[in-house]
Length: 170
Image (cartoon, rainbow, N blue to C red; front, top):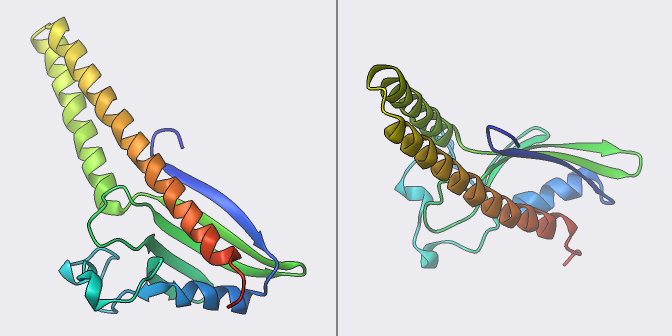
């Protein structure tokens, strides 16, 4: 996790792949087929009284899954969990990558582009060192805040996934 915020991990579970997938599906509100993304519209943010408690919202395709921690309000830095479930002789291996949503990455790229353009103007055309340093400090502060926010949401999503995968049978 250096320039773009992401995190990868591999989880090994003693249960078989079918049971593990069922546990995940039981804790997931399946995104509607008409939705092109996990955070498509206001139907994703329903009133608390209208839905049962879920840990995640997302979709499953074969042995892969695309999940996001369930919230009742928008969280821009809530990571998308892209994963794959594979059987092994000792149980199940779950490969998970936590990453930002595409729209947030686009906004991050756009902000970086605007920063670089303003830095070029301040350094080469206006030759204004004060504005250049202020632009660098502003961008560094914004980037640090974004990374800290993503790290906080990442740890919450990791704990939620581990709770779902490793909880005992009911």
